[in-house]
Image (cartoon, rainbow, N blue to C red; front, side, top):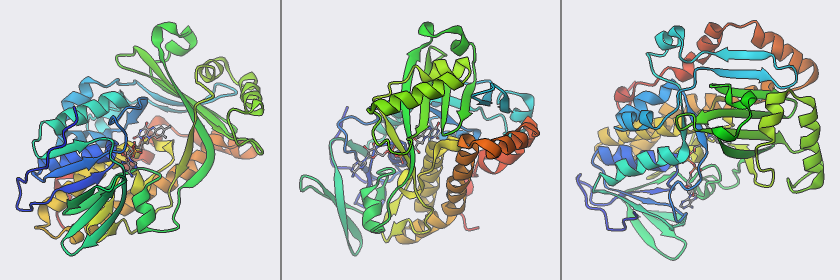
Length: 412
Ligand SMILES: Cc1cc2nc3c(=O)[nH]c(=O)nc-3n(C[C@H](O)[C@H](O)[C@H](O)COP(=O)(O)OP(=O)(O)OC[C@H]3O[C@@H](n4cnc5c(N)ncnc54)[C@H](O)[C@@H]3O)c2cc1C
């Protein structure tokens, strides 16, 4: 239920921290700050927070963040735990990468933290419920933030209907196509990848055996496309995402030529990939884009957080995890800042830049590995298949080893 009361302060500041955007970044930041006692007012443009629901995978690095947010058990209860994450050649069905994410080697390396998949609606519900427990966290829906102005010790956050929200600070959690980032960095725009995603959630009982038989995350990759699927909700549904590079000269997925392009791919790939591709609605699409890494996420009392700061391609399935890490780190820094909000925001971008930029840039390199053809694909296959699972785990150490949430406020 939406609450629109004015926040009451439980810390010395009598102005709330306003958050623009109620996605995973905005909600987890609201929760992290609320748990530290900050008054928070979240403004979401949509009339329902978290209405769009598909699956999201989360690596072991997210588990201590869930713990810090007090939602570890609730998220685990709503999660599915795939036994493996596999990358397969869509044409030959050869396994390129096999990550057994329930194995003893995985458990030992990543401190027993599970690899999980969760329905976004379920994750949002856990975050929302936790926020609603905090009387000084207020969630406003149907509120589009269009601008901000800064005056000395406060920020005026402006809504599209002339509302003005007076805040001690503003977190811009307004996603990949952030209006507030555009204000902070005029001329800086998302980098369009030329790929589009189509998604589907299909009841397991309606699926052919070739799809329902695989319990893990299966990603079939080929020239200019991939299709990925995994079970959710106690394996009662299959989450499917098809990602395709729009061919030259085709702008719209509604074009007949696009349907023919998909049919051509389907005629070339092995049965499970073809069956999975046939499940998505080709008329509905999401354009895939990311952002260039930038060092400056803040403008005095305003900071970017989540995708608005560092949107990435989905190669590592880590955008939501990075948003949760951001939230925990930011709350810790603000908690220890003794009112020095500008200083805390500067430290935030310094602490988070390298890790998030690495996710962005390595995701681009991996994206090429996934979608290349010819000699590049042959070399990719040789590189990937000579590595053991243990080699791949080692390559993921920097990402999957959790940051130490409790030490984030301390100076390095
Ligand atoms: C196909 C696909 C698959 C993905 N899979 C994974 C995965 O498996 N694992 C993973 O960790 N990540 C994954 N991601 C990435 C992940 O979804 C994002 O990184 C994460 O959701 C970012 O959250 P956010 O809150 O920063 O942005 P968003 O989710 O975009 O939320 C922004 C919110 O702000 C609101 N908003 C926007 N502008 C305004 C405004 N001006 N005023 C008020 N409200 C506003 C929007 O309505 C929205 O609710 C995937 C992404 C895609 C596209």
